[in-house]
Image (cartoon, rainbow, N blue to C red):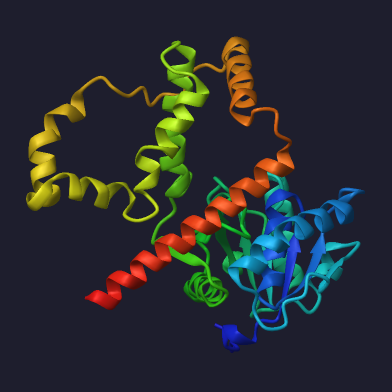
Length: 322
């Protein structure tokens, strides 16, 4: 294990890949007063990166900027090697292509110092599978965010079979230091935790649309005006604990346990037929109501900020009254 500086001394982050996720990470790092060195092979990467940062900055400002936060403290470099030069932490956010991830992570591991963590934003690949080409896979770890990374606080951290223990701990400590909510997973799990749960709902939604049982708009409203209102506070497990009344989870399971075998769910993914695809696209357009993507993004950001503030206030009030 190399000699490590405190995570508070991490001042420069390399963002490798500047698409939606990578640019979102860049905006968040900038809001925390960090400098960002970015790389992306797309010819219009600089323009897209600037557009995402500018669009995210009002929401980040409303949430509260760290001292020294500067949306201009970012530089797009022509090569990976130049982008990671002088970086204290690396966040890789390349497309979900396993061969690409393997090659890029191997290059990053070779180009960075022994005390620099290289984290991948992958949404599904385990690090054990992505690190196969790296001569030194010990500093490679998953740091999986939720979109958009500048707004949603969750990051799931998990190493691969050859990831050194200090690497996962340091990544988690760094993310917490910059204000993220971190789950340190003790084992690799396909799809991680949050994506597994999200995917279950998504598959059920596709089945219901394919069977003509519900429209995309009805499915969205069933969550936004139903259980989705409870989940920012308690999550699905604690919600069911409350459903058991004074008996809590034990009473809920004893009472509703038999219904777990009821044929409600169809967890196998349905075939994505042209008809189902067209129905989902048309349904999403109905839900969007003709509004442009930028307007929808702004609406989402305002609402998430309001929800986060309301939940934080409720928790603070509960703690004060305890």
